[in-house]
Amino acid sequence: MATKHVIFLGSSVTYGSASNGISFADYIAQRNGFTITKEAVSGTTLTDDEPLSYIEILRGIDKSLKADLFVCQLSTNDAAKGKPIGDVLSQDTSTVLGAIRYISGYVSDVWHCPVVFYTSPRFESESYGLMVNALNKIAPDAGITVIDMWNDEAFNAARKDAYMADPIHPTEAGYRLWWTPYIEKKLSEIV
Image 1: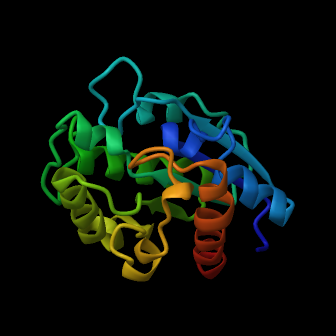
Image 2: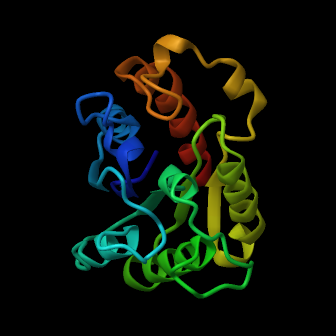
Image 3: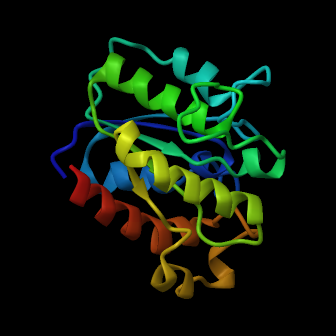
């Protein structure tokens, strides 16, 4: 990858909460020799209706950074907390789609770099599945590329219990052996 600096935004999955704070973001940076800004806080949501949201964290990132790529987690917390998805044209940041549109627009205006959202692999959540489908629906119009682990049957078939601390959070081995090669390949296709 020719990328030099990547900003990662997310919650516990991006942080690596079941892997001592080391996630695929750290492994990808190490393997490719680029720097990262990893802004990930456990429990946060895309929707901007709580004291700390992705949008609040995003606004705190140094605007003078020279970012080559922005990668954002489609938060499982929004599904778990029953946040409204919104409609495909929503600009309301208290909805998932409105927050996604805001984040994409902000990143494009500030850093002028490609915006990628990634989904979690399959787990038991009808709400999250609806969020993934909605993200895929608005992605072309919102200028977003999606790394869709949720709908990738081959990727989900490779899932091993040893790779997951629970249904959502990968272990160190899960990041290193399962997520990192997959996401790294997808990012190299994007950039």
